[in-house]
Image (cartoon, rainbow, N blue to C red; front, side):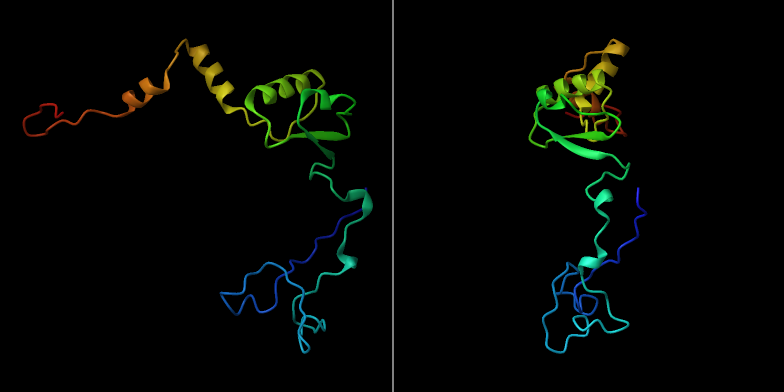
Length: 154
């Protein structure tokens, strides 16, 4: 794999001077703009020379290619040694669970499994406790006690 170099941070001209000018990049268009003329001591301009090597573009930091998945059938034909899976953000909980099960069978790595409820339920089942959400809220709120008379307040 080719070596990757750190790209400079491209900031909008004069964004450090004025609060109203945000840092997000805009191409300088002024006739006398120092950034456009690439003067020394001014921030660099976005140019094609800063692009990454084709072999390393669009890779996950782990060095594997990302594949976006919306349904369990999309997992077919994916090589676990060269690709990682990201589940689409619109996928619901049931389909997400099915995708996770299929991925485990095929030993695929999922970048955003995001199933927290299932883990909490499994933990509660291990302890033998089934807590309803309404009961949990009642248990958290302690009753107020008057310190002088030590009686419960309504």
